[in-house]
Image 1 (cartoon, rainbow, N blue to C red):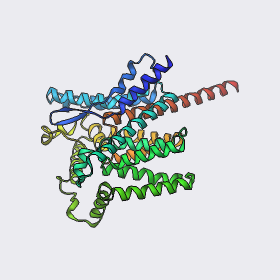
Image 2: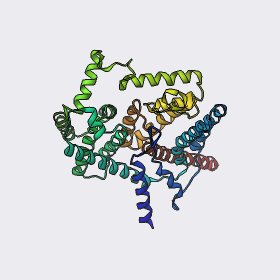
Image 3: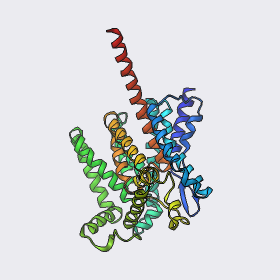
Length: 390
């Protein structure tokens, strides 16, 4: 029975990390929310969570605050807004699942396995197709801007995994490092670079010299291999941006960078009119006619949360991210640096909004609340016992 539990949980976590979307109209919607099935597993144990209850209450109030808007729009507006609310609170429900160290180990294994598989598939595709000399074409053929943050987390999990032999660790890190490059995603490289920079500042003294040399040699090798492709494109972007040329015009909404600025202005304009609760989970495609036929993305995790939940929901979201990150800085450095990368990545793309990203947030939030609330309860019980004894 114990083997069945482990296998069922592992398979559920693996499927929850795999990204896929369904087509709705002219756009795709991330639809992998398999992790909710954990509530149907017969061996899942539930628990009370004051933190989880508080989060559910606040984000439900955000929905209720938009009731008047629902009555002034059609039924489709209500259905899509309510569906967005459900998707938003799905990860919060993990606060009520009893998560133990064995769950945490299974979570890490699932993230690493899927990321390795994704990276190996990208390497195979590049070897099969070859580089066509067009960065953006290869990004469509091989790369992805929707999975890079998962590989970033996997990389740092492997780096700090204590159970791995060194050869296994180095092999995995090499595969994941190449996988990060082959996302052909500037956001992924920036997020990974930011996390690695923080690592060098905080943990440089803990790193053995031989690993620094190996990392340096691997970096040089990747620079040589990919200098004319994705790495060259990144270098060109920052060179052009620094030189203030028209190659990357931030005022041109037809460009990738300019469009993000354009969307940010729309979000801020809407929040200026609806500061407390935002759109009550309605997306851009419901608020602006220009997106009604094509759909729209906020192109930032933070833009999306701010638009849908207003200043109240956004402030709480940032507070939760801060507390989670501070907890994992002490508890697991791999998750900590992975979170740093995901947080930076989130400035340019959605992360925890996506189905597979929602699972990452669900587990990391649930495990954090399990650990901290149990510890707090034990401290209160010890304090009470001491008071009675005296």
